[in-house]
Amino acid sequence: MMMRLFTVLATLLGYCIALPAQNARITESSVVAPSWKRLQPAHPNATVHLQIGLKHEEHTMKQLELRLFEVSDPKSYKYGRYVDKRELSSLLQASKTAVATVEAWLRSHGISAFTKSAGNDWIRAALPVRKVEDLLDCHYFEFANTHDGTILIRTLEWSIPQHIAQYVDAIQPTNSFLRPKPSSRYGGPPPPDWEKQGRLPTHAELTEEDVLDRGHLDIPAIEDLSVNPTVDDACNRLAVSPLCMRVLYGTLSYQPRSIETNSMGVVNFLGNNNNRSDIRRFLDLYRPDAAAGGAAENFQTILLGGAADQQTANTADQFERHMGLEGALDVETILGIGYPTPLITWNVGGQPPFHASANKVHNANEPYMEWLNYLLEQDNLPSVISISYADEEQTVPEAYAKRVCAAFAQLGARGVSVIVASGDEGVGKDGTCITNDGKNTPRFMPAFPASCPFVTAVGATRSFDPVFAAFDGRSDFVTGGGFSEYFSRPAYQQTAVENYLGGIANLHEGMFNPRGRAIPDVATQGYHFAIIYNGTAHLLDGTSGSAPTFAAIVALLNDALLAEGKPPLGFLNPWLYSAKSGLRDVTHGAATGCNTTGFPTAVGWDAATGLGTPWFPELKDLALSRQFRWARPWYIV
Image (cartoon, rainbow, N blue to C red):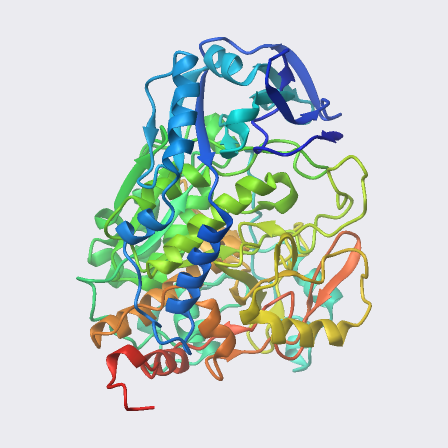
């Protein structure tokens, strides 16, 4: 989409057409993208869930980062001494002048029903279109996507008064639709030549295996295995089960002891939910002890932003859109590995602001702040949260992305590990890798929120010996990796990434930001997950399965720590990048895409599989041996 940029005072509220206004500054304007057709004006009573983010002072954000790294860096005196909600709310408190000014502006437009976050740095109001049009001097229209008929309510240009703009850095709309890509089924052929010959397969041979039609696939059951099964005993590389991953990553024999004090979380966006009937059937098949323990019935679901918790069968339209497919993969995976750790899920309605690009022609962004603002106002939080959603970073307005990232930093400072999928399009989807600033510059497409430096980004692998960076020749799935355009590279990964960049020399020079935050951080299996969806068995690919896999392992690590009276791991990355064991390097394959060879794996960190895959026994020992200087006498060095 062509963009005409003005002085940026706040993020784009949809797409708009400005009306003349005194003392107003235009933040951004755009024309209708070729893939969209403008229809009639939006109904004046259609609801816009408006969120206005008040600016944080620069020194405030530096203080937040300082507190985060103090409690997350194993070398820090304050390592593990997490802050509470009240301390963070006090730190991030919006100025009284800013709050009063924006409130007065809202009331001057007849808006008096609004709520504020604990720190008063977000103001929220559910408003009819006519009110938002008056507030932002713009008109909303309905837009239809010419590819799939998706309807959006958007605007093309908006403005706010100068005296308001100095206090505001984000204004968020909602109301969009997503049509998830279907996943294919697979069956079981005879072993390929490379397996029978005991040699390393080529990329072409793996692709040939992917596209071969299959019938029934046998998945090993725990009752058929020995006491100490091997990966060969427990795994079918063409249909990966929780049992396989528990053996593969070394959690099978671990018995959780902190289920009263530990918990894990999964968030569902875009209308996704978790069908308990499907989860029960999945656990019956692949984690019978969890099924017998009532895991499918006992997890808590919290509804936000107008979301629902549908437990009936999908309608024909919902099934066509694969509604609930993502939710099935996420919860079946995290329970299949992390049980009996208690689970909390959040169903969130709505979508946040969006800039169209060559690959993302409809608003598939997730309403992060609707959910994050709720979380940050809670006194008690899970020790780890899994997020299996990703957007091209450039489709998210930069100011909004930074506000979301700051919220993740707050969760880390409170001792929560935030685990995020690194994306499923490699370095970018073939044929779509151009910037959306009107210049159409060829560029790799990193994913957000994985690109936020305050989360742990998880890539995907396939196969077991050897392990490859994941792709599926039958679909367009490739594990995501790359370098942020919005966020600079944090100190914790500086050495690892510099070593990698030195190794690839001038490869793809000019296609990425070599000084950006690099992703992923780690990787786990992301190929051919066995799931139950809408009562039927399916096989799915994606870092959407890798993220809850790693999150479940972190939940078990936190269980071991809490059982010993120690704090949970919190923000993981400073610890992971300083670890001398516990991660197994992946040196085969690449994160391809953008019609290029992409980023190859390498010894050490790489932009396809990060630091490698987890080995729970070593990570547990490493976590339990962490030194908390505040817990020891000052005279012990």
